[in-house]
Length: 617
Image 1 (cartoon, one colour):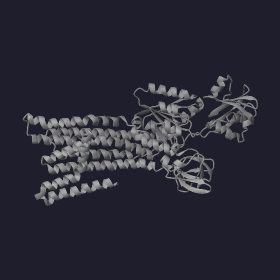
Image 2 (tube, one colour):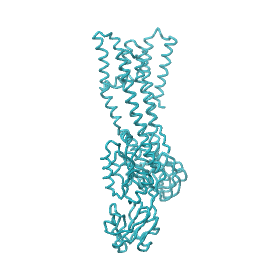
Image 3 (cartoon, one colour):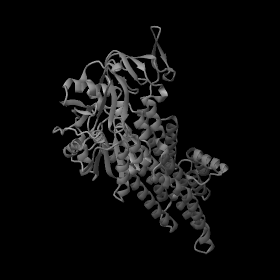
């Protein structure tokens, strides 16, 4: 609890005790006016000061003005204890707001704790603590047991286990050794590591995440924008109505000025828009903070609002629903098997695609780069190269069709990589990927609990795509797509969706940036080391669990449900009490409840967005 909050609590307690003592023990009765003046100053000085300061700045129509004016006016009219009660309960409401906001901020601050305070840099055999900003690419840093990884890099000495919970939201130890890439924000839990830095701090994973979270509050949802606009026009209107209520009826001989001024004060106290202005942004802030604790980074309230209306979930396949750990499961050669594998591996020498990597791993021999020249990538089809003077093409079915080569049909399920040697079909290699253990449950949750239509877009073969779709029970599948074709199909889905909900695209962040940016909401999975994913996506899942998609939807729906509850409850109660106040059926105490009581209830309701429970299958 902050020093300011402790001071406010002390003032509230002291005012409550003195006011209670006055009524129970009749103390200070002979000095009543001076007693109430002192009590009013004790509980209201900061509110009145803010109201006066804002009037000087020309910004007088805010909640401080409404409450301060109402309290001062009541005091002048001789309603001393009512004036003090207005300020007392308003301070209680402000305190609840402050505590709730701090609670929400703590969920964000917990994420901010991933920011390293120092790095151990090795220079001339000595370990020196330096600011992470001062570490350069290529420097060697030492990460001791229990320390945070300060910068992204590659392990050059040692092996250990990393706690990734600060990034993913779940404790999943990751074993690392020489040659493994590690990212900032994780905690080294086992043995010391020496790491060669590959990114400066400003470009590191932890810096990207912190920037994302810090900017989230600037991207407001429609509900937040509505409240801001509503308050801008609402406050001058209610002040005008209160003046009319205080002046016009007495002029029409409908009662005394004293009676109508008191009714106008009840009207003013009730009308304060605190419950809306505070609780709506707090609801979104809580949703974003609660999601961050689960390893789901949401870039703004607008994306939460859109996600709550999702109707179509479009998945990439490789790395999203499948592990992306490709392995060669069969070789069907028309030439010598070893030669087919060798030509294919050599042609893929510069490719970083997981399928290409699996072929090179299956080859197991050192690749002689001198044998390979004129390597060219054929977008969406494969590669070509000159190897030992022979023209080699390695790629998919579409490459075979383009080259007018008749390939051999394969009965196995998997990605088929064909090879052509000097214009002759040389055989194919079958590469298979494994479906993630949680993918089936993720699809089931989306369809059964959230009524989503599921679609899979993939560049893989029709046979493989349909096999995966059948196993996962996906509604619709499009296969053998080039990168630009994925974007075109997603645009068609968005054009044809009508009023059936927002279109969400879920990819692994690799080569998905265009599609992520086209969708109503782009979700990047497994983005622990992908800068492109963090930049392109609207929501970032820091691990590769597809069930987090349904959890993100659950958080979004809960947040919007809480926000709508607050809007309806706050406006409903306020309008009702304002009418009662104008008719003389409600006193200042009920007006205080309609402001402070409703604010506290709305704030408590908003705080529920911080509590996130995962769905059970």
